[in-house]
Image (cartoon, rainbow, N blue to C red; front, top):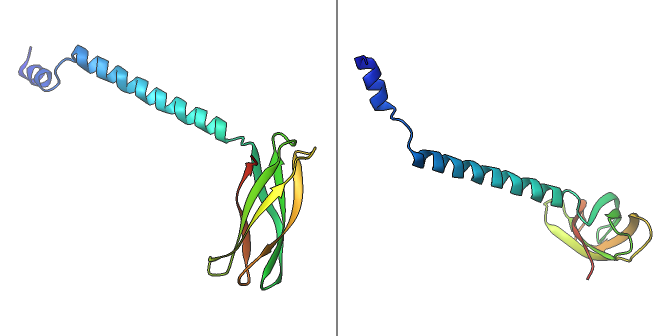
Length: 132
């Protein structure tokens, strides 16, 4: 063995059994984390209910009229959607809780009037959930 080979072997010693065990455990941990992310993504990619604002109108400084569309997996379940209106300064100027009764269609369109403290420039759905 030359001096260069001896120097390289001293710098990079052979792996021990502990190195292989730790490497295997790290690999299992990474695969477990990937599996958890995939399962969570699949579960949350298809929620029981979702809602969106299709359009809105500001007929006065104290009211916003909006059309929301709610999609449910099971149309026979009632739904509650929380809406909020914002002013130009992004301040919340109005809120409403909308009860949507059970129906027969997966897509339900609802017109909602939201009372505001000041003139609103935007309205959004905070969240929708199955009632009960």
